[in-house]
Each structure stands twice: as structure tokens, then as C-alpha cells.
Length: 390
Image 1: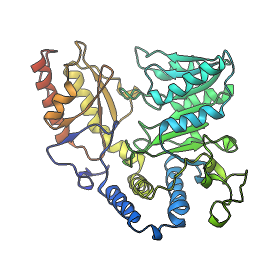
Image 2: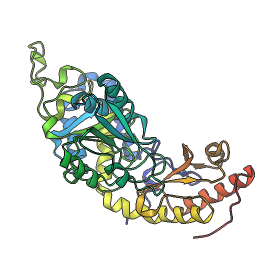
Image 3: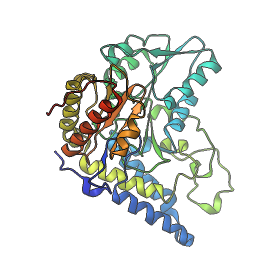
Image 4: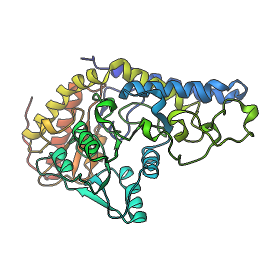
């Protein structure tokens, strides 16, 4: 297990932060890398090949290590929606076929598929939330020979309820159905190997659990799609772009691997060093070690919430770093703001209080969370909560 890493962040002791699923705090090392990168603009004559090519390839390699892929499979993109849009532009969807998504799935992995369905006469097949939260069985039942694409997360963004992507990947391969993943709410916090899942595309933002900068994401593109069509045509994606003197010798061929899908201005000399610093730290900790470290805190949160009458997803059907608490009588109005005024920061997503735990959280944070929850519910008269200790 990893000791509490609060010292690596600028987190005052009077702040209990559980909102990494929305926006994680920066590591001090990531902040320093960004400041150093920003200062490079003071002296643009010192910017060179490293910023635009070498550093970007370092970033590809680090992300590839995180998911068990090759650096050649990684593209640098600005957002999850850009990555999903790339997948949607490169996968065949015919009239009357279905695109499988979860009920209340995050919009970035829904809107592109709705657009594709409308354009091609296909349909979006929405898997209803199962009463027992067995998403895996519910998804598998809806994948058949009329399915064009399965587009999923590893866990639901509102409450952490989980999908077994290995099982879904096997079903997709058996039927020849492409699998597109947005793992932004889970990658880094638990092990994930693309070799076991074999998705066609996988995208992940950096500003959440990976502790990196905003405005950057990384896209895994399976080798069979390396010859696909990029969303944009920029100079750096084309073969030979390292030789600035020959850029006007226009070329139709691309840089090797998934580089053709890179966004323009990919070599951002502020965010790329930040991303490198973040991924190096995540790899140093290790996803398995992080999962083992946060599991006891999350287990305690689940037990205390259930004892207070706030139902939670069963432990075997949720990820170990994020949980959604639902109140049968409804949530007090303005709950997140009320808790925030006490220095306890959570999110409300749908009808759930979403709580995420990272390596900077500890038992004191959990105690502060439940003390604030009890006061807030009591003040609102929304539910009767009894004080318990776990």
C-alpha cells in the first residue's frame, strides 16, 4: 500500500477533497512542469525539435505503458469527444444497425453516436440501468449480429458501477463488433490491459484521475485502424514533417502508427511536460498499488453510507475508487455547496452524491465527510441519519 501522498499536492489540511472524478488537483511536480513550460515562451528562439516531436513521443510511450500497448498505437488529442469523434469517423455503421451505450452514459461518448445514427439511419441502443447494477450481463444481452458498435466506459460516471470490459470485449470479437471505450473515470486507478480487452479505440482525458493537465487526452488506436481517416489535416501529421525546410513539398502519406490522428498543435510546450510528469508519477505508484491503497477508504465510505440509510452499489459491482450515494428521500437542495462551505468537496451527478478517493485522501477526510453529511441532511430535514463509526 502507498502511504498518503498529500505532501505531493497543495491540499490544506482543512480541505477534504473527493472530486477527482470531475477535476483532480495537480501534483506539485505537474504544476512546476507547466510553469517551466510556460516560461519557454519568453525565449521562443530556444523552442525546437524536442518540443514538437521528442517530448510528444515520450508521452505516447508513458501512456502505452499504462495500458499495455505500443507507443505506435497512441495519438495525442485534446479531449475525450475528439477521440470518440475519431472512432465514429472510422467505423462502419449501416442503416438499421445498433450502437450500444449505457443509460445516462457521459455525453461525450453518446452525442457522436447519436449523430452517426441520425446520418446513417442506425439506432442508439440504450442499456437501462439494471436494478442489481449488473451492467455486464445487461450489456452482453444487447450485443448481437445487428450491432455496429459498442461504446462504453469501464464504470458509470455517476456512481462507479462497473462493466467487465474483458467479457464485453470477448463478446464483441466473437461477433466482429468494434468496441470503443472512454476510460476517463477509471484508468490509472485500477489495472487495465488493452491486450485483454482488445478495444478498437480507447480515449482517456488527463485532468481527472491521471492528475494531468486540462485540454489534453490520449487515444489508443488498434493497429488495424492505423490507416484510417484523421479528423483534421495538419502539417505535423504528415510524413517528413520533421524537416521544416521541406514542408512545402506536400505529401499525401502520414507519420507512422496512430500519429495521423494527432490534433494540430499537439506539441504544446506547457501541457505536454505536465502530462509527462503526471504519467511518470502514476506509473511509479502503479495502478495495482493505487487500487489496493484506496480500497479500504472506499470500503469504509460504502459501509458508513449504508449504515446511514444511503444505498450504494454492491462492492462487487463497483470500482474501488468512486462511489455514488443515493438518498431514498432525495438529496437536500444545494448539498454540494453546503458541504463545500465546510471544506468537504463532493459532486452531485444525477441523483447521486459522487465521492472519489485518490492517494491524497485519508481516514480524517472520511470522518469529515460523514460529519458534514449528517449535519447537512439534518438541517434539510431530508432524512434521518444516525451517527455510526466504522
